[in-house]
Image (cartoon, rainbow, N blue to C red; front, side, top):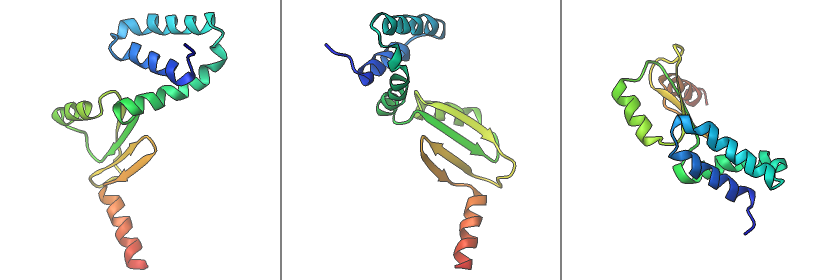
Length: 127
């Protein structure tokens, strides 16, 4: 069976998803060793790109960035971690926002901030 870059990425994701944090280095080392033994190290960049694709197919998103006017409550953070399971979630507080949030999910941007709404209102009124 020939393993293409996407299949290799899927194998890596499946190996890592249920592993504990202490197991990650050994699993990664085994994977890199496998690539070396099979003369596949030159494909590493393509495999890495496919890891993000596989992750997105499996979980719906690989990167979620949230910019907020205020910190999230503990309950909201827990709910977010359940909804964005498997994604790399970054939360930042930006005091330039009056309220609401700006959310980036991979390449998509959702502006639900008060500042964004005011800018859109200004553009509408000036048009």
